[in-house]
Image (cartoon, rainbow, N blue to C red):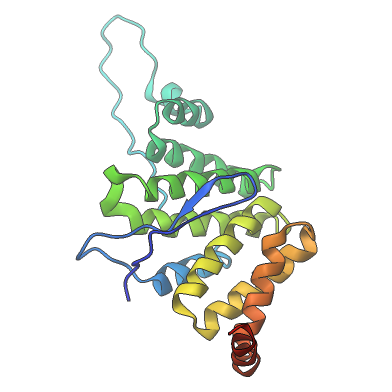
Length: 225
């Protein structure tokens, strides 16, 4: 079943999260996307999803005019990422941020969780960009992967946990299958422990628990009629 949802939800900061509608013939299944995201938890820190390292450029012939070398130009991915982001070129920015994340995760530097989360936010933004419709599914999957990688770096990093819970809820509500209710329940349970004041965490946990017990869910549904 392809993604047919194009719904929006807002997190505590008011950010809009979108499950993209893919064009005919280019749809991916939510099951496949979720499988990618779950698999990301087991990835090593040096294996980010879809990393695109810019090809090495040939050194120009000397012209008598001093120009920055390729090494000098690309030796500061932080600067290049920020410049690309400022121009609105999120795909290029993500390419350089990935290089930074790989280094940070490999060296166990603090902040990798926040940067992976930032990359997930950028991918989610791209998934809803009309100009990137053909890549909507890929970018949506990357967003889930990056947030999972943030959680892998720091299992109790709240921003990534909240974003994952929001997406798993939408996926579970769409498919209503045991696998997704279990994933939602596990994520929401940890979220309620990390931030008891986050209301959605309790709502999602209760919803998942009800659906995990069909008899109780049926009884609850009848009582609401």
